[in-house]
Structure formats: structure tokens, C-alpha cells
Length: 293
Image (cartoon, rainbow, N blue to C red; front, top):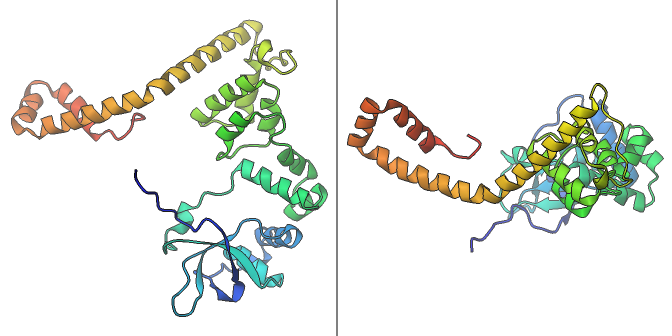
């Protein structure tokens, strides 16, 4: 079995802020920006949610180089914090770190808001700190209400509008999973697409058993056709999902065989002279790196 090397030590380490060294200069005007004020207010109200990311401690000085979290570090110092939780990288990749960071997903944001509220922070206070309407906080807080665990798992790393939850929760769990799979595979996790899937959902697969109002400009016949096409699309998706592994294996084998075949100069010369179309297809397969191509 191949060993996987973790990029960070799993448990955050509490580090004195005086031992954390910034790795880049802070842009001019940052302290007066809306983003900085929002982060500072958030930390002041509910504390630091996302730990700082630092490189390994220097062997001589014991100091840590900051990889990500420069704005948070400034805010912590301004607010009088003496220490902060830090994720320590197992190697020094400060020059490429920001391009490797996965920002907080919508569901992670939901859990952060729920955690803050459980600690006693009111939705009104959160809305004030984040400079948003309180209704936005409520939507984020109730994002997963009525959403089955399987659908939530599919969405856990995605970024989408909170209103997606309002639409998806009107469907029964099986249909929720089907629609989320379609949205993720199509890379189209939008409220408009979710509402179209809802309208195309049979009444038996809706929580209240009633069809939603039809889309503006769509006739009853078009609605029925949409339902059939969505059902066919789901069947095709499942079929592709089942055969994807075998298709990849076939592609790898074909690519390897054709690469060796074209290394034979006599064969390559013959194909170029007698079958240029076939030669072009073979070369295309050899250069293919995924089924999407």
C-alpha cells in the first residue's frame, strides 16, 4: 500500500504570536479595507475559527514562518491576543502555498456559523460582524435542514448559494441524491438549475406530494418531456458511472499499445503515406490524458 504523506500535522499547535513571522508585506490600505474590518470584527466577536498556517519551527530561533493568514495575524495582534492555534506544515512550501489552499466551502461555513451560535453568538450579532443581512445568516444556519446525509456529503466541498437548500429539501432523500449528483457532474450547482430539477420531479418523489408551480413560459407538454428527459439523463449518468473505471483501463491499454506501435518508424511512415486519417486518430489517442478529451 502506498503511504500518503500529510501536508500538515493533524492537530493545531498553540503558538505565541511573537514567534510567528510574516512571509510577505501587507498591502497598503489593508487596515482601512472592508475585508480587514470584517475579519477583525469576526475574531473579536467569536474568536479565531480557521487556524493560521505556518511552516516548521526554525531549529535555532524556534520561530515559525507564516504561510497563510496574514490578515488574521494582524487582527489578532490588534485585538491583544498573545497566542493562536496554528496548523504546522510538514515541509516549507510558502512560495506555492496560497495556490494549494482550498477555501472554506459552503457547508463548512454552515458548520462554522452553527458552532458560533452554539457558543452564544446571536444571528443578529453575526450579521452585524459580517456586514450581511440577518436573513443571510439564517439561511446559512439552516442550510442542511431537511437535506439527507448522502446529498450533503456530495456537496461538502462545493460552493453554492444557500437557497439551494430551500429547493432541495422539498424532494425526498432519493431524489435529493439524484439531483445533487446531476448538478455536481454538470458543474452547475445553481438555484435556477435546482428549481428546474424540482419542477421536473414526479409528485411521488416530493416531500409534500404536490407538484410545484410550473416555470414561466413552459407548457404542460414541455414539463412532461422534461420529466422524461431527466429520468433518461439519470439512467445514462448511472451507466457512465458504472463503466467509467473499465473505460479508463481500456484507454490506458490502447494508449500504451498505440504509443509502442507508432515508435516503429516503418509503421508510422506507412500510416502517414497510406492512412493519414487513421494516423491522426492514433496520435490523438496517444496524446490523450483523460476521457474528457
